[in-house]
Image 1: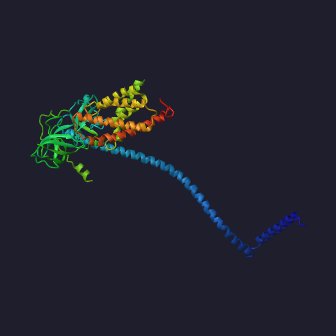
Image 2 (image 1 turned 180 degrees about the vertical axis):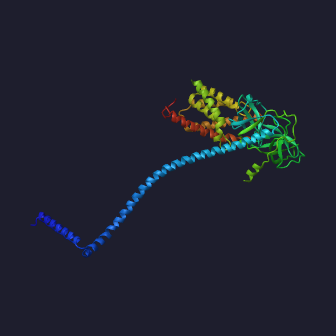
Image 3 (image 1 turned 135 degrees about the vertical axis):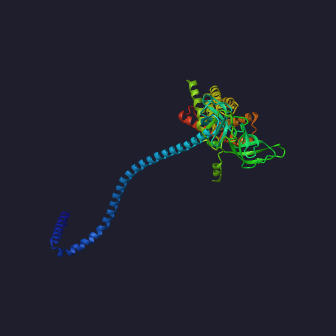
Length: 297
Length: 168
C-alpha cells in the first residue's frame, strides 16, 4: 500500500527539482533563454487581459475618487454661486423696484409741479376690506389736511374722491365704483355729463346731449364744475356710445386712462378752486400711448 | 386676558384683510378673513364671544370700506351667532361641516350685502353680482375656513372621541 506521506514527500522532491531547473534556466545566457521567454510572453499575454480589466477598474475607481473630490469642491462652489445668484437676483429686483418707484415718483412730482393747485402726496396702503366696493386706503388723513370729497389723481388721470378721512388714513372711493360720480367733459365737443363707475370696472358718461357729435376715441376730462377736481384732468377715452330711442340723452362707455389695479402713489387735490386764474387746460393730457401699446401687444 | 386677546385679534385680522389679502386675490376676489374668523370663533368659543367679536370686526371692516353702509357691522355678529348655534347642535366638528357652513354663511353674507346695496340705490344685477362676487368669494371663504380649521386641529387636537353618541 502506498503511503500518503511518501507521496507528499515525493511531490516535494519534484517541486524542488523544478525550482532548481527554472533557476538554472534563468541563469543561462539570454540567447539560451528563448524557449522560456516564449512561454513567458504567452503567459504575459494571458495575464495582460485581466490586468487591463483591473487597470480599467482601477482607473475608474481613481476617476470616481477624483470626481468625487472635484464634485465635493464643485458642490461647495455651486452652493456659493447659488447664494451669489440669489443675492444678485434680490439686488436686481430691489434695483428694478427702486427704478420703478423713482419713475413713478418723478411722474408724480412733475404732475404736482404742473398742477396749479395745492396737493398732498400719499401712498396706497390697502384695498377695500370687502369685495363690494372699489376703494383704496391711503396713508394720509385729516391730520395732513385731507377731507371728504377731495379729488385724488395720478399722472395718468383722476382716480376717485375721498369718502372717509380719519386722522392718519383716508378712504378713496375709486372712479370705477358705481357709487361714485364726477362731472366730465368730452374734450373735443365740450359736451358735459356725469361720469360714474360701472359693474364691469369701467366708467360711463351719462346725460350727454342727444345731438352731440361725440365719437369713439374722444377723450373725456373733468369739467371742474363740481366735486373736488379742477378742470381738464383726464378721465379716459370713449370706447362705446349708447344711443337709445326712448331716452333724451346719450351715454358712452369710457375706458379709464388709469390702471386701477396698480395704483401705488397718488396726489390729493386739497383745494381745486384756490387758484384765481384757471387756464383752459391746466393739466397737459398724458396721451394714452401706454394703453394703446398694451392693447396692441 | 380674553378681552385683550380679542382686541389683538381684531387689530390683526382687519389690517391683514386691508393690506395683505390683495396679494392672494384671484381675479380680483379676496376672501373675507373677518367672516372666517368670526365663524371659527363661533365654532370654538360659543355664541356670546362670537357676537362680540363679530361686532368689533364688522365695525372695523366698515370703517375702512368705501361704502357708506354698516353692512358688516350688522352681518358679522349674526353670522357668528349662526355658526355658534350650529356648533351647539352638532355631534362632531368635521371638515365637511366646516366647509359647508363657511360656504353657506358666506353665500348668505354676500346675498344680504347685495340686498343692502340694492336698497341703497346701486342698481346692479343680482346675476352679475352672484357670478362675479358672491359665489367666488363663498368658495374662497370656504377653502380659507377649512385651511384655518385644519391648522387649528394640528395645533389643538380633537378631545372628543369620534362616536355618534358623543356630545361636547
